[in-house]
Image (cartoon, rainbow, N blue to C red; front, top):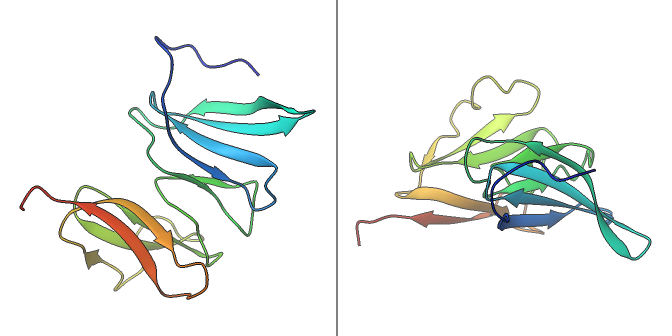
Length: 136
């Protein structure tokens, strides 16, 4: 598959292996998402599409449904829940089956724009977040 049309070379802002370690999802500086696979000792773009109108900073395969890719979230551990964050300083939990509004009682203020969220690999209810604030 050919790369999408754009001006200048892209910058890869994030990447993550799928659970089987056969593919990589890559978030690019011009808002596109690429799925890259290792084919006969070389990397090939399997799919690429415009995901956002700005930089794509986080992408992740769903570990329970590896054909499903999220942008703006990371490492869903629970197959029914995704955590998101944003510049409004809040982390939210979403039910994948009812994505129209966050799960009640899951709004957590983190006192800074939420840039990254990563689940603890062994402790179910523990997450690491990276937040940025200008009030130092």
